[in-house]
Length: 365
Image (cartoon, rainbow, N blue to C red):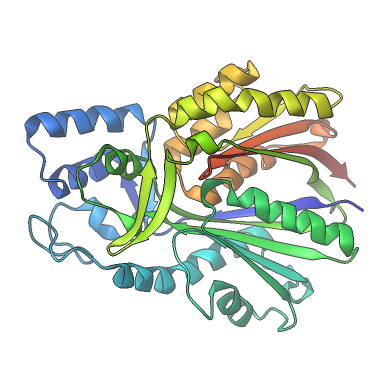
């Protein structure tokens, strides 16, 4: 049996925020002098991001906040509990918006056999999966899986789960939803890690339907998965629960670690793929330098990697949700002439983990 992506949907919260607006908020929140503010502006310009989205309107302001305290040092800084409450209040509607974009109005939601929820920016119990079952009217007997705290590569693991389910059940219809509210975990301590994380991450949700058979029109066959672990990079990217939200450690050395380690993974791909030639590339836009590292390693041009840059520019890094935004941007422009063309996809996260996947375009009429 096989597994096919038959539909992809995406959604973002209501507040679209320019990179300049976020910069102004951060310069004030970090209490920066002129020179520090200038250096931060250089960092923000270098990200390649134009807009991001947040469930918090505060990032569009420099005063009159609704989530953060209205004083110079944002004191008392919002607790993890307060941030978790925002996640619980906002994650359901954002997830539903992505699912509705994925399935459309006519799809029989009662036919979904499995639900996989993915997030590293919030959790509670009873969880998002149960809220979706109740709110969307899914079968109470639906089989549920939650994938938490894996970061930017987690959508790959969700797709692996869906692939395994479809290979074990020829009637499976697996709905995956990746929902991340990265912006609720802003950290104001003046560190390079915080500056970098605050410059990159935004909020978003993506949903994908995986079935055992392709539907009429374009589907994507889930063909092969390859992964690798670079323990020497474990200290460069981490995600921990702190007293004032989840604390991201994101070193500027991550691109260097990936550069030194990805060649072994690519070599293994070449050994296991008969014709190592691809028509499309879907690379997780963890940052411009990471995209450039992959282009060099794969010997591809920036133009061939344009889908990643488009998502980075319009949304920033939305952790696990992001790679499905990239794949959707490819999926939406595919036609019958793309039948049997292949997509190579990559994502990276804590560990330091390298994930890759091969997809084949299928046109079924």
